[in-house]
Image (cartoon, rainbow, N blue to C red; front, side):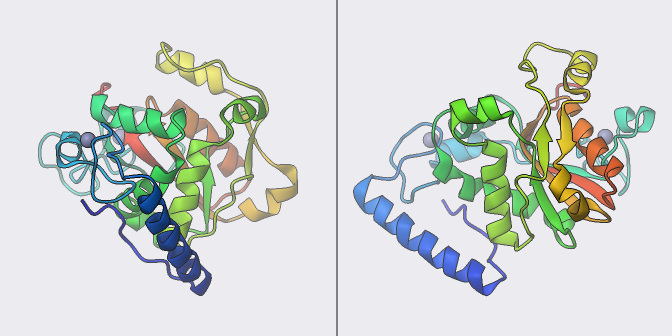
Length: 259
Ligand SMILES: [Zn+2]
Ligand SMILES: [Zn+2]
């Protein structure tokens, strides 16, 4: 199952891509490649078996122009969902590669806690595909940051891995340190929409020494999952307040239970 798509546009990107392929081949020789989800053996590292591939729900049009919520029935281009009509989000567009459900949850958890960091390059290809319109003229990729303590415990930020992979495939510059967490927020699980909004209020800031990079920049904010959208909305507000020209959001998966 082919997952790598898109081509690096810069010479250094091409060199990196070729090193990446060599490492991948070496890795395949040492460890037999396994499905990212069920661990069945597959042809290539960082891919899914056909059954797991079919279990994912990729998102395509028609979607809400603003938040990317998939519509069940055909809609006119530019249509908005009820939530976006009532409370327009602080970002311009949000797009996600797939629906956050049982099948995609396994992939997200593997990337987040399971040390499946090599999977990020496959997921980067999905992000590049679903976010092509947002990436076409973007200036900066910025991951949603982890608090330093959480980063210390997990050793890596899954959103930064996704942003890095998206950078490699799209050529859009990646600025992983632009946003920082001012405080650790309790986990969002179990909180409703307003609880999540309160939980992340004031949690982020633009790193002072990088303030200049934000001014007028077309930013694509990257995260693994968008649940209620409270986290990405808070980050988008902080970036807009710091002078960003626009903020779009790109996530691997998106919850749709609010529909
Ligand atoms: Zn599988
Ligand atoms: Zn919407």
